[in-house]
Length: 81
Image (cartoon, rainbow, N blue to C red):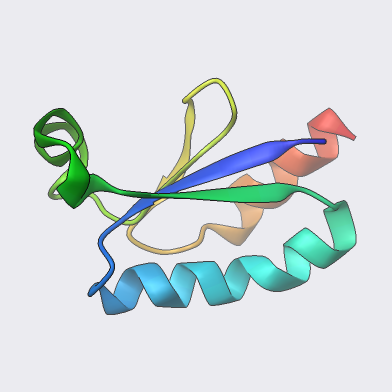
């Protein structure tokens, strides 16, 4: 099954919004979501600190950040189907 990763902070409202907006896509395209709190790793905090939330594919390629980019996500999911 396909996995997407969301790099986030637990207290970030944009992160919660992005996760909520992923739900309909997850139901339609059947993928797992891995949530990684960047505050657990100084390296992740340095890499993603100003960009969160960040949505990546299983290979770590960024699909979008800050807000869910519906077009980018749909394009990615249609290619892996």
